[in-house]
Length: 114
Length: 111
Image (cartoon, each protein chain N blue to C red):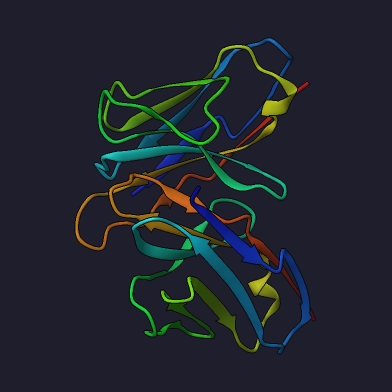
């Protein structure tokens, strides 16, 4: 099982450029999440999805958009990248069911905005 | 506002020492508290705690939850250099689809 796969792993952008991070999971999980991790800030939730075709805002949604057109994929888009969006981004998925409330994380995507 | 606070933020010890990491929370409709270990990449799951006073144990790591005082501790005995990591605490509430994470405790274990 691949679990949760994020692409790309690294990316450098110029201010104002756009890009999309892809998260794919092969565990048939309903819930998917995008977090960003910054020094001293812990993991902060950007957007999440509770099922195919649904999305919701997290703690820090501004400047990001998401889509969940297929159950296995959760895309995070930056329309106009800003230096403040330099961060490591983690995708995670969560299965429903008894005792299943444990996130499975992807390996992370390091984004630098110049 | 729901929040999770971890302390200390950073800890430096020598191999063989015992460490205690703290996690306190203020969350409405608490459901569970989770501990994760993050080394270089993604966080990996350690423990999930739902009931007070019941210790979860895995090798040299153990954790316990106090729902009355709203905190959890993670103990690591006989630390090894491989224990060096950021330890994250997260809390889940009923009727929500999210985990609330603390900022983490960075543990460095030197030989």
